[in-house]
Length: 121
Image: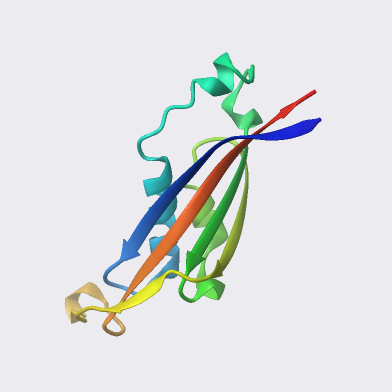
């Protein structure tokens, strides 16, 4: 089988309160796929079900070791999914609000690339 990239989608996500890198990463992935339809998966690639797609997700976020992989991948409704998390993104000084369970003033920004791959003979 030959693997071919069909589309690469990019997104950005922010956790303004709570300092949760998983939240920022999940929002970045959701942003990447938010405005897409993939009719080419059926009409061009000839897949019979969306779970036949291979989905490779790359996320760069502060504190990558804290990211909960299953929660980030749960954003994607279909596909054989993998996630690579690396240090990156941005930390911006915001404002801690105790009622929002902030631990500090940090806002976490993540970036994501979601690649849809198909396999052909």
